[in-house]
Image (cartoon, rainbow, N blue to C red; front, side, top):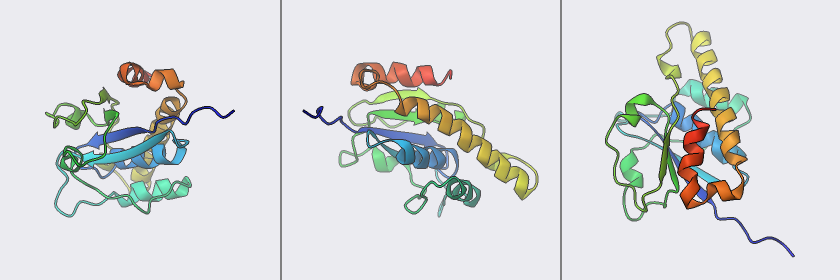
Length: 169
């Protein structure tokens, strides 16, 4: 007899502009989520015509992670009644963590995982690319821990504690 299917955990990654860290996190979780997780990303204040950072897309592609459907978007897209229900909202930049977030439908679990902005690294394009690669690897390690949580650690009551504990990993 097969075990019952697991519910998919929807995760929203937030950053200020939704062009680097949150985009990387969305792509990584969708890549390794094993059908248990569905990732989204958004920004508190994406600029007009904001797009994912080309260096971020480049390092994702080099890692074998799909980039086709990635786009920068406002968190307002996920605050409405018709938006996908989120189980977990994770800020990945300190600016977004300090902002007043919308009240998310369903009151999902929240956590903050602090990462420096790879697009703010001064230097050559090669140095900036390396910053994106390091951020990708750091996010990948933490997201891999999230994906490998036991199903009991991903239920509604323990998801927030589990995600916040991963911030210390």
